[in-house]
Picture 1 (cartoon, one colour):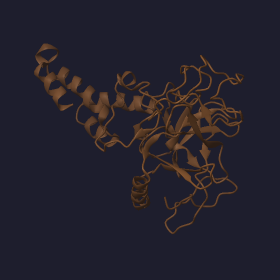
Picture 2: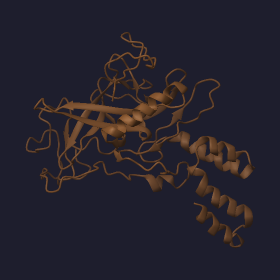
Picture 3: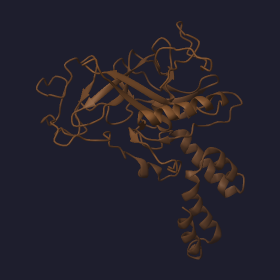
Picture 4: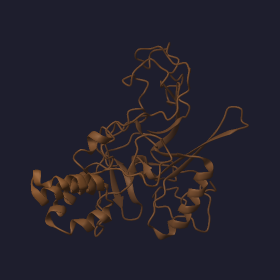
Length: 338
């Protein structure tokens, strides 16, 4: 970024002088700044203040940074709280562990073009795997080998080894968020994910996306998060899903950390009664890794908060208080030794 600004400053006499160069450099640099940095630089002059306000407005309008086809706005109704939007790096699908130096532009008028649909839902593919030969698969097509026999719960989809395209009716979880959602801040729980329209039972809501970690790294991060949690300056979103394999002798473990890099699912809060969404492990033909997807477990009304159970409660001395508000609330958030 510094080199880009230097080149543009050297050419400032060709288009608008110093102010023009400032505008061009600001458009390049400011979208990479965190909220506190953006607020600080906005106070230096009217030009930077105007650019900063525009960036903030765009960030508030769409927390997904243009990665989703439907914008996900943020709303903070808490009186006296000046935080307008939550800041994190966005990925709509699973990603490998990212370098701590990785940055992402957010708030520029060109972000949508840079970010939009940079999405392959499959991290790794199985070479030579068999898939269906259908041109387009539908629920009534009994010949498709990728369709679930139990239609009440989607656990299998077409994948990278199948002939069908993304428009296939058996790829419902692979196109990102397809329902209207919004992120709203609560005085006690912090940011949460809410329905911005009614969502029918069984409807796909979103994937739980973030950095896919090895178990050793997941345990290291969880220990760090536990140490930082009492300060109140961190909202960890490390999800650990364990699946017992059919043999009964082995357990598959998936570690997805959406704390620094994730998607809208990181804002779904815990409910002790199970909430209104369910986690489902979805496998696709030709994909090595399954994906963790969230579906509506019952009809969800507009403006209702989306929630799911984080797991069984195991009390510990530094456990976090639960504010789910359900009749079966245990008073503490689930926790375990990861």
